[in-house]
Amino acid sequence: MSLHGQYDSDNIFAKIMRGEMPCVKVYEDDNILSFMDVFPQSEGHTLVVPKAPSRNLLETNAKDIGRLFGSVQRIAKAVETALKPDGIVITQFNGAPAGQTVFHTHVHIIPRYEGRALGAHGGGGAMAEMEVLKSLAEKISAAL
Ligand code: 5GP
Image (cartoon, protein in one colour):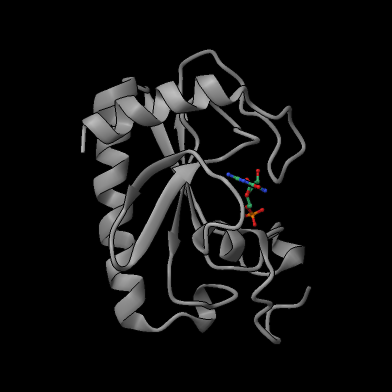
């Protein structure tokens, strides 16, 4: 998938937002949906997805980017309160050569803990247990 092209409304995040696929939800409003990554790179790996369709940040309008990153900061603060990580990595990939695997714009909030290695990006790791993700999502939601 190149950097530019047709938006595919059957991508996995579009299906999640339409309720056709399940997710472990952290937060939702008119502009964004936030949920747990099912292949977490660390405990508490959370995704923030703007509802407006766009393939990547270069194709997202500036108003939506403003709202998106306002939410990213708010949810990252909730992750900090809930999980007490030692650091938080915020990542965002544009185009397959850059590491993007789902072609609906999204931001990763990845807590980091001293002495714990980071898992592989893009589904390379193990799928998390749903009950574990639900418990993490509840803690993050409660801190929002
Ligand atoms: P990208 O590689 O496009 O930056 O990130 C896509 C992310 O979506 C990856 O971290 C991957 O683990 C995650 N992911 C892929 N499929 C699903 C899914 O069905 N549900 C959830 N919650 N996350 C997914």
